[in-house]
Image (cartoon, rainbow, N blue to C red; front, side):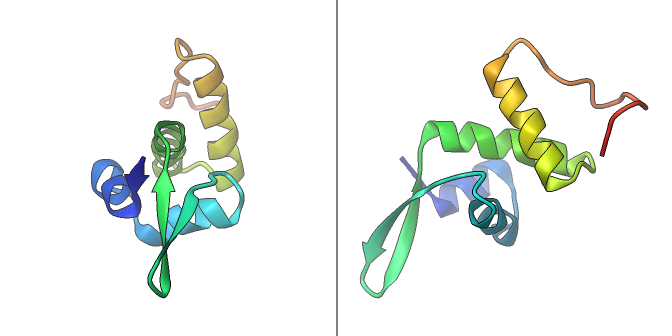
Length: 90
């Protein structure tokens, strides 16, 4: 399990983007009470999903499309979408 700080450091995704992915239901970290706050714990699967979604978001895809492309790539690891294609749908 990884904490939010590890995800932010390893993927270099802004915290608000990470929380937005959670808010939209694209990721489901486990929430662990820490005093008056809740810490989020992410699985390796969450990490891979976030990494791929962030890759597509940085390429300019909207969140929903970035999520769909990431899920497709996770299902087909040998498939890596050609991000340089002029025919991509946003």
